[in-house]
Image 1 (cartoon, rainbow, N blue to C red):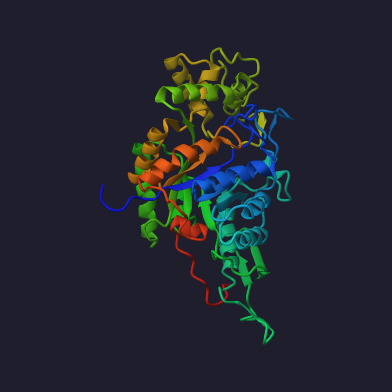
Image 2 (spheres, rainbow, N blue to C red; image 1 turned 90 degrees about the horizontal axis):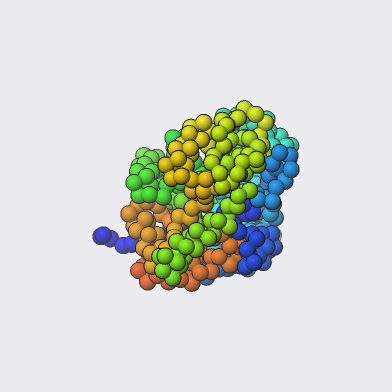
Amino acid sequence: MTGPRKQIVLGAYLGGVNHHTVWSDPAAGSQIAFSSFKHVARTAERGKFDFFFLAEGLVLRERLGRIFDQDVIGRPDTLTVLAALADVTDHLGLVATLNSTFNEPFELARQLASLDHLSGGRAGWNIVTSSDAFTGANFRRGGFLRREDRYVRAQEFLAIARRLWNSWADDDVVADQQSGRFLRRPDAGAFAFAGQQFEVSGRFSVPRSPQGQPVILQAGVSPEGRDFAAGGGPDAIFSPYWTLAEAQPFYRDIQQRAAAHGRPPGSVKILPSGAFVLGDTEADAIERHHEITREQISGRGAQILLETVWNRDLSGYDPDGPLPDVDPEPEAPLVIQGRARLHQNVFETVARWRAIAEENDYSLRQLAIHEFGHAEFVGTPTQIADRLDSFVQNDGSDGFILGSHLTPGGLDEFVDRVVPLLQERGSLRAEYEGTTLRDNLGLPAPASPATRAAG
C-alpha cells in the first residue's frame, strides 16, 4: 500500500432493550440511567472515538396489543441525553437520531443548533423518516403521511434546516458594549421557504453555531438514497455491507456520485454499524460469541423475531423445532407494532430462510440466531484490529459504529485491548486534532453566508 494510512472513523452506540443486548446479564447496568450513557460516552472518548450515537425511542413497541419485555425502546429523550453528555465530555461528537416525519423543521433546527453551541461544535443529526401509523399516533401529524412522501418531506425538512442555520453569518453577533449594538445587520435570522410539504417564514432565533451546521448522517442504499447522499445531503451514510466484495462497489459508487456533484474526495463518510466479541484466543472468542447469542436470542425472543416477518402469532411453535409450516400474512393487522419492517418481500424472505434451515438442519431458534444474532467482529484483539484496519484501508468503508451486548461496560474491553493496536499501526488518532466533530471527521466547514438566505 502506498500513501498515508486512512484514519479509521469510530462511533459508539448504546443499544436498547432488544436482541442486541443482554439486559438481564448480572454485569449489565441500567438502560435508562444517565450514568450508563455517561459511562459509554466517556469510554468512547478515552478511545479517541469520533462520536457517540444515540437512537430515538418515540413509542413503546407492542405485540398483540401489549408491551413485551424482549423489545422495549423506552429511553430518555435523545437530545436531552446528548445535551447532558456535552457537559461531561470534551471532544466526543454527539449524534442524535431524529425523525423528519414527526418533528417540525424550525423546532428541530433550533434544538440542534443549540446542542452545537452547548457542546462547542460537536453536534450531529442522523436524519430518519417513518410511515409507521402506530408511532405516528403519538404525534399531531398521525400516520397520514404517505410512504412515498416521506423522502419529499425529509429533503424539504433538511433544506429548511440548512436555510435556518445559514440565516445567520458568523459575524452577525457584534455585542459591542460601547455602542450598544448587538447585531451587525437588522435582518439576521430572516428566512422563508415554500415547498410541497412546508411553507414557513420568520426569524431563526439561534445565532450561527460553531460548526455552522451540525454533521448530517443518513441511512439508505436505494438509488434515490445514494443520490441524496452524494448530492449534498448527508456528510456520512450508513452501509449495510460487511464483505469487501459488496462494500467496495458501494463505496466507489458513492464517491463517484459525490464527485459528479462537485464534492471533494472524502466529503461523504461511509460507516457500517456492528458488534464485536473479544477472546484471548480465537477459540475463546467463538465460544463466547456462541454463549452471548444464546443469551441475546432466547426461545421466546426467536419466536418474536420471526413474527416480524411472518406477521402471525408464533408462540405455539417450539423454538427448538422446525420453522412454521404456514405462510406469512403481510396484509393482516400487525402482530408487532412500532418496529420498522426490515424485509419488504416476506414470502421471498421466508422461502430463503426455509432453504437455509433445511441446508443446515436449523431449528426455529437457530435460524433466528443465524439471521439476527451474529456479531460482525469475533476474535482476538489482534484479529479484530487486523480486520477493521484492512476493511478501511481497502475502501470497504471509512470506519464503523460499534456497540456491545453489555450496557454500559461492554465497550471498555474494545478501548482497552483493540484501540491501542490500531493506534500502534497509525490507523487511529492518539489524540484529538480538532475541536469540532467536523474537524475530527475531516469534513469542511460550511461557508458562512454573507447575506441572509431568504426566498
